[in-house]
Length: 148
Image (cartoon, rainbow, N blue to C red; front, side):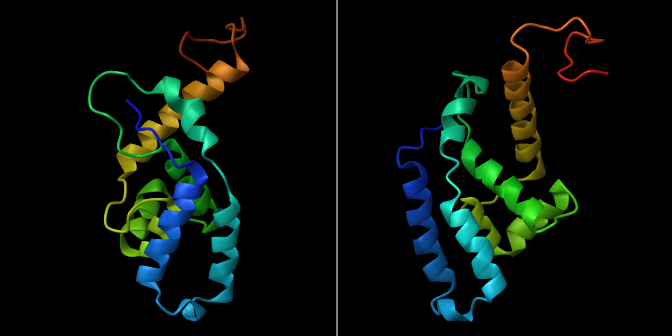
């Protein structure tokens, strides 16, 4: 079950501002290069991701605690910052509160590697469903999404 993100991108921005001001009361102390990244992610509206990914979350059982938009934003941030692996990125999220809040997570509650891998599995299901509404004959095994 996926939690509902009522505020969308505006809620992300409001949360970011309040958390950012708690971490950096003097925002002029933040380097210019960091500001460039902050501005890019400030305008990156991924709220539609929550709606698109809804069908890949179960309606029963324990609800998911992370929004797909935050997980995707975090993955994109890891690419921009050139993290070597998901494990390394999870470590950076834990020790660098700015990365956590820029991703959309509370600074003291960041996801682990398993959460990201679950998200990747759901995302690959979405890609498969969008690309191939009907199973192409050139696939070698029944569960594959990409040609062998």
